[in-house]
Length: 489
Image (tube, rainbow, N blue to C red; front, top):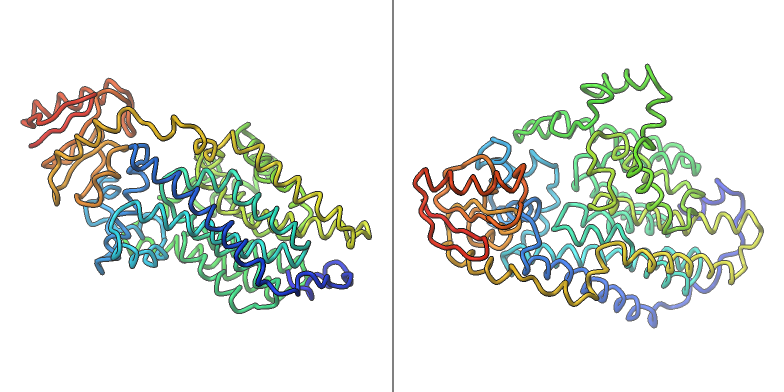
């Protein structure tokens, strides 16, 4: 990733362009404006969904409860998930996913306590990767390509899907990976490795990404650093999943999604050894997997596959594609945002390597052609994914919102309330929210929806029957409108 590494991997590079050495004074406000515009778009998308009751308790309330407790200097209890899993109100977020990095958001709750804060913070963090991606591309390809690649990232479908689906730990990853790659390429190893260490605080499986970075460094000629990173990353995964989560009341089996290969890591390795061909074909065994794999590489017009940088993303991608959890394979959720910056940087590096191989490194036209095409690809994918909603007037109108807001207003502050998945985010700032579902938690207040199906009920009929069951147990109906029902015990 550094100039020295490029020499080791590809032979001597052509003379560096003087363009990237030019003062950045004129570009900083432009890059800043691009970053601000992206952050605003992401925040609008999330805040409209929150205000129109299209956000969800799983996972916005989960994260909100954890951060609120950090802000109050308490353990990050997430009762909404603890009760759902039968583990009690004092279940901590670190037992579910090892994400202590959420504590960094706690000071924001001293300014504004509520899930809207998370949505804005997530928008800013996703957009904050833009300056680092711009700077990396500027050094490799030039100034104009840097703007085009930054725009392609800002419009990219993995980011769109992540900002449209509540708030998740992935919000930290694009920025950290952008810092890691850009700073290392600039010859600043210390901030790069600090960013890499920060990844380990995001989620229990981020050690796999660190191991991928090690593989990348090894292939690019930095053997010792590569081995150390890979060893450290794998060790971190084993330590966190095998020991740390159990200390907080979790279980390694909570994260095991490979029962088709074996009951645990040794069993899975044995299963792969027995039938390596089947394991090799597993990432391509479902149409959804193939679609997602193609969509991951297509924004770079497949040039990311020419760069060793893509190896940093490989372990995380394989973790998804080898699993037995179909939602991990889909392009509809937040999982692809973990690797989006790595793949864009790999596309930039892949083009530079291709031009060197063709002995066309000084061809400004070719350097401009790919970033322009990448930007066009990003634009063509916008209508298929979440950013498409922003320019449709219907997105800003939700007929059920008025009735839902009236129902929420009937619930007093400071109480425990069971609420539908789409209603919980509106209550979490002033109540302790549990998920309204087939299991009863005997909460003093219940909000139900008898007009629309809500997770986690198996059917709409089961949902309606649950309301009748609660009224038979002594709950009293205090509000009903447009299918929303508020019950008091």
